[in-house]
Image (cartoon, rainbow, N blue to C red; front, side):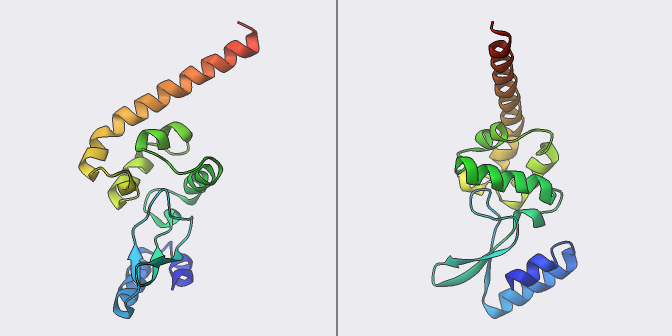
Length: 148
């Protein structure tokens, strides 16, 4: 079923049909999670059986290129600790506000233990702090290159 979901990922209606079929079969579909999901739907042990974890690339309004960056960063540097950590570790041009909002809406940031309303409230601050941190590190890098 995970392969079928991945194959039909671009067709929202078809995904809904397959998810309904999974439900009828007793196969649980787990929400996307920036710390657990892969790019595509994958089977995962869950409680007393097997479930399917929603693939990040199948979330509406995110795109597979941006989600590949998320998965690569997580594999290289470890789990994200917060939405602010997430924003600071990824390029804001590739993972923009619209993508962040989509990730909040679908529950991909629920792993941080905050309500979605709180995550939306914190979104501007996380983006701003990540931009400041990025600018600051760029200044240090440029200073080091200039020797100042």
